[in-house]
Amino acid sequence: MSQYWSKLVHSLTPYVPGEQPKLQNLVKLNTNENPYGPSPKVIAALQAEAADSLRLYPDPDSSRLKAAIAEYHGLQANQVFVGNGSDEVLAHVFQALLKHDQPLLYPDITYSFYPVYCGLYGIDFETVPLNTRFEIAIDDYLRPNGGIIFPNPNAPTGIPVALSEIERLLKANTQSVVVIDEAYVDFGTESAVSLVNQYPNVLVTHTYSKSRSLAGLRVGYAVGHAALIEALIRVKDSFNSYPIDRFAEAGAVAALQDEAYFQQTRQQVIAARDQLVLDLQGLGFEVLPSGANFIFARHPKYAGEQLAASLREQAVIVRHFKKPARITDFLRITIGNTSQNQALMQALQSIVQA
Ligand SMILES: Cc1ncc(COP(=O)(O)O)c(C=O)c1O
Image 1 (cartoon, rainbow, N blue to C red):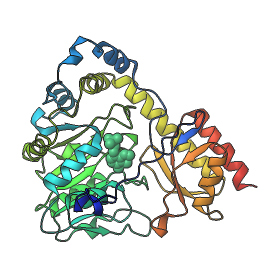
Image 2: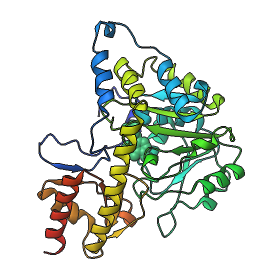
Image 3: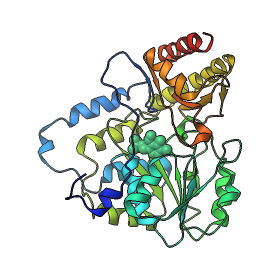
Image 4: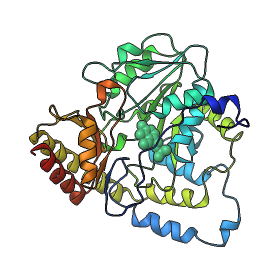
């Protein structure tokens, strides 16, 4: 604390990201990164970019990347916004599109950055409880609001919302923007990108951090009606002209050009998830249905905090949330590669059967 801080800074409760441990040889299943490296084509593109041209600023409009994303999704370039990770894209979305007189609605159990953006930008919000099965119930969002946001699949539960339900929400809710945060959509959830040409108030955000194995590059994007994108560009150009550096643009374009690698690695993660669910159920865990690259699981006989601590003693790190009370016995476990998943199961077998 300091006398020099602004009033706003005193009032902030910043987001706390999952631990990035400095120790080697940990089985790191706590931040939903991809266990596989990026496509070799991405590495080659990054190496080619390490050149004299780095003395020049990058393209402030990231035109090449926007064109590639637009083509990938069958949209126009003016329907695409790109940013330094989807967190930055979301930050601009909150400021540009979700701050209104009525409260913003989002689930009570969801991505914990949403309340942080509300605090930063002074956005009034109301949380909408998940139902008893930990699902997002669309009917509960059919009320006056200044905007709606939720991840699909939701985080940290991993539970997807059907596309038909999202369309039902869009048909009923035409007065405010509905943001679908599809950070994990490529692991088996239906995407709402197909709805952006039909509904002018839906915005869909994606990240390169998960299914494209590029958390370290920091690229995310939003697609929606050109008028929504224009609002985001206005905020971006009032904040940072160059959020996408030369490496990020080159790597992100190359990632989209290697569809075969993308399909192969995401299918491997999906298959490993399905196996891990069976293995955990075999140990007595309850596992929520997941359309993501992580699972949310609890054991009827062990407290979540205790399980996370015991796993850590065996060099396996998973994510445990102390709040809210409804989820304190759950662990959020990222799907790893075969040896990481085996290490997790071995550790759990020794803990749970002990
Ligand atoms: C639901 C959700 N949205 C967005 C993000 C942000 O991803 P990034 O900033 O790496 O693109 C995350 C990261 O874990 C997430 O879980």
